[in-house]
Length: 235
Image (cartoon, rainbow, N blue to C red; front, side, top):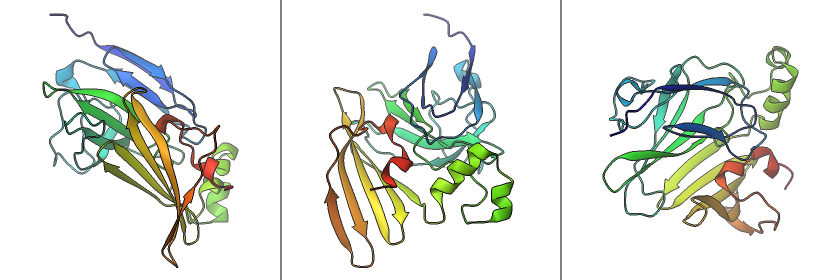
C-alpha cells in the first residue's frame, strides 16, 4: 500500500475556481467574479485533515473531507445524488474562519464511491456571493474598500440574493437580478464532461407569479465552473 505523503500547495484565488485531489491542486476555467483572498491549501494525512465546523461538531463529516487549515465548514447541504450514480454525495460551504471583505465562500462537492468512501469533485469559488459586511449602500463603507473591491461590491447591490438548491443530478442557482425578478439557472450533471452543465434558464417574476423560459445563447458559458453572476446583469 502506498503511503500518503503530506503536501502543501499555495493557490492565489483571483477569479479562479479550484479543483483539488489528494495528490494535486490545479486551476479550472476562470470566472471573473470571485474573491481576492489567498488560500493556503494543505493536503494532509487523512487523520489530521481540518474538518472544523463553524457552529460546533454537530454533523458527521466523511473522513476524506479536507479543508484549508484556516477555514471552517459553515453550511452542509442535505444529502443528494448529484451525479446520478445512485449514491448520496456530500456537499458543503467553507470559508476562512475570520471573514474579511472580498473573501470567497467555497462550494465543495464530494462524490461518494461504491465502497462508501468519497472523492473531491469540485471546490468552487464562483457560486456563492463574495463576502462583504453589508450589501446595502453606504458611502462610508464604500470608501473603506479598495478600488477592486468597490467594483465587485457595486455589482451585487442590495437586491442581490442567491439561493442554491440541490436535486438528483441537478444544481440550481436562483438569483435576484432586480426588484421582483429572479433568474433560475438549472445545471444538470453530464457523464461525458464529468461536470454540471447549464440546460435551462428561467426568468421568474414574483408580483404576477410568471415564469419565462430564456434562450441560452449559443456561445454562452455552460459549465458550473464558468458561472459568473455579472454575466446575467445586462439581460
